[in-house]
Length: 301
Image (cartoon, rainbow, N blue to C red; front, top):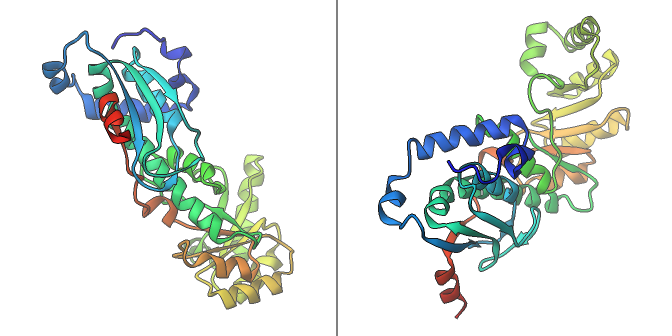
């Protein structure tokens, strides 16, 4: 790999370490010892330009990641952004152009697209959910139901789409779920254990309790020291009843198989957040492709 743009000062270096490592792993997976098709078919001195063409309606995300892919594996290619992450895009929009060695562009093309298409799909899904909640005051949360190795990319896309990140992993929030309660013996025992453990570590992180009914809501409030209650698999009517009972003492979150088609009823029930695993485990990638300058010119005729 020609090092015309040192990685330590390139767009690649601006990403968090876990994202850089993911790009390196994905590059090794895709390119291996070399792109034999481009090496065989494209003159080594060919200089070209191309554009990333959107072919569906959605929300753009991952332009910076696509640029980082080129900085890592195709450092002689100039990457020009023509749009910004978070933009609503439609078919026919060119969101970025690349110029440089044809072989490098072809080698980096698919990996850059894989990241950008996936992130744009997540951002589009998040915006759909956020739009569905418009006017209710409720906000969209993601979950840990992410693609292994791609969590930071997908959670970044959620924020770009107008959502809020839930915990990043098992280390930055205590989330007491149904199994924790069952194994601890009660809601109170689980909450007390959480606070003892945090005290032993001299740490302060949010304590969230997942509750299954009003009895567990009551028990969590009585236990005290809870930062949010997660209403798991409540119907909208049950959520409204719980919100009225909680009466603003702690923020509330609705969860359990929600999609953009079902979230508004929960926002209208008065919850502060809705969390959707759907954002990161089910949305389709946004259709984007790389087209040569000649192909783009032909499309505009």
